[in-house]
Structure formats: C-alpha cells, structure tokens
Length: 351
Ligand code: OSB
Ligand code: MG
Image (tube, rainbow, N blue to C red; front, side, top):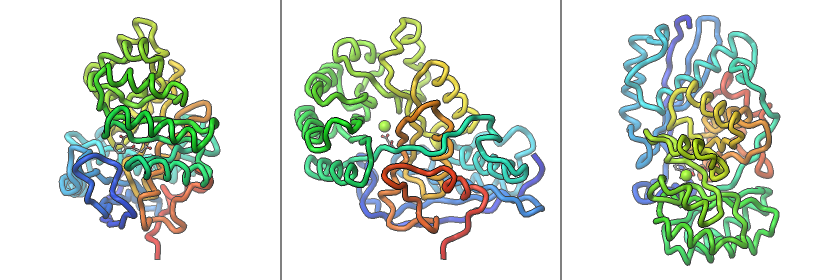
C-alpha cells in the first residue's frame, strides 16, 4: 500500500444503561474510543474504530492510543502490517485500510475482499438484567421487530435461568429465536440441567455453557442442545478439531466471531471461510462500538454467511448518542447494508 496519513479522533458517548458484562463495567456509563482515518493524497479516506472495552479486551484505550500514535510516526503499512499490536488496533487499522482501498478503486468492501454480500443483515437483540428486566426487554425487543434474542444467563441459579427462558418463550411466542449466553458459567451437570429445563422452549443453541469446553460433546450428547463457541474460539486448543475428527460437528450451533478480539481482518475472513465450508453459521458480533464500528461489522456480517443468520451487533441500544447522523438504528431488527456501507469511506462528525 502507498503511504497514507493516519489521523486519530477520540470520542466519548453517553450510555443509557451499563454494559451487559459481569463485574468490571457495571458502573460504566460512557463509551470511550477512537475513530481512525487513513487518508491518501487524492482525498480518499477509510475509517476504522479502535475501542477496547474495559474489563473485556486485554488492552486499555490508553495502550491502544499509544500504539496508534507510534504508527503515525513510522508508517509501517508498507511491510505487511504492524507487529506487536493489540487486536482492537489491528482490526481498526485493517478495516480502515480496506475501506481506503475500496474508495481508491471505487468498489464495495465486499468486492474488495472477494466475497458475496447480502443486501441486509438481521440482528438478535441482546437481553440482559434480572428476571423481570430480561422478560420486559425481550417483549419490548420483539415488539420493535427483532425476531431473535440473545439472553444473558449464568449469573443467578440454573433454576432461575430455566424459569426466565421459559417465561420469555411464553411471552414472545414460538416464532422467536432464543440464544442464551452463559459465558462459561456452568459445570457439565448444571449445563445439562439447563438444557433439560428449557427443552420445551426449544432454544437455537446455548452460547458457551461450559466452564470446561472439553465437555461440549458430552453436553450435546446428554442435553441435546447445540453449543455456540465464543470465548472458546480463541483457545489455543480449539475444541472444533476433536469434534470434527469424531464427526460431532452437529454439536456446534454457531461460531461467534468478534473481529475486535480476533484482530486481523484476514483472520476474520479465514474463520468465515472455514465455517462456510463446514456449514456452520458465523454470528458476527460487536463489543459495544459506536455506530461507525457497528456499520463496518454489519458489512462483514453481510458477507459472513450464505443464508440469513442473526448477527450480534444490536449493541447500539446501549448508546444515548452516536457518531453517525442519522444514528445507527436498524429497522425492525434489520440493517440495510446499502445505507450502512457508506460510512466507512465518508464519515464526518455529526453536528
Ligand atoms: O458475551 O458475547 C458476549 C459483547 C462484549 C463482550 C462479550 C459479549 C458481548 C456480546 C456482543 O454479547 C453482542 C451480541 O453478541 O449480541
Ligand atoms: Mg458470548
């Protein structure tokens, strides 16, 4: 790539409620992050977002900013990309660079990356809170038009979670897709008890039920519910390999792909490729970015699967204000890619 100028724009956006993350971020009511721009001397630009989430990403915002500032001085883009760079920074730079190249060549991101793109992406709503809050948000979300719900579980007792999922199913009806996410809270016995307790609610899969991901096959055999891999995706010893070897691919309901955790765009595309060839769905997911970052993730989600798969990028519901004008706001749980796709090459601060 030819030389491009790197600009960094810090932002702060107020939230309507604390993030749906255990522990560290319970009190956080503002999202801080960086928008980066890569510009060439002909006026083309590509935008990216770098926004490590406190208590979730390894790197802090300050560390990410320091890495970017070091890059401003050394312009390392010519030699196959920077090294020793954190995943949020790598992804932000990669996507900005891809948008810049798309703009220079006058083509879409999908064309640049050599992938088919769907015209729209459907999203699941992210449901978090205590029993009543979760049931109420579930009802609200489906009333808004969301047809899928990802529901945080694993914080109270298994019995509480079983009753909550069954209550949500009762309130939203049979047509809505339910995806509980336990963030690895359970022992095998607890996870199986959950699967049995929610059998009649027929959930699509359970995201990360197990403390020990080595037990996925046993969970599937005993509980009869598929598993979506999120945290487990980045383990050194992927549980996918032994499952594949043993012909147990059916145990995998989906791969949750968070580009800001994976890092390089090439790696993200590689995961999509592998999932597609195995017939596994990719649930492209956000980490509470601004609308600019969410729009880029929506574009990637539109290339991730050959059929409709609900993506995990409805986290704009947490933002009181956005960096986009009009704000990132899916209609009836659906993002129109033709409007989301313009931001990566033509964003400006809202007035
Ligand atoms: O547990 O999947 C998670 C966001 C940040 C950190 C962890 C998680 C999440 C999400 C993303 O849930 C939103 C979604 O998947 O809908
Ligand atoms: Mg998860």
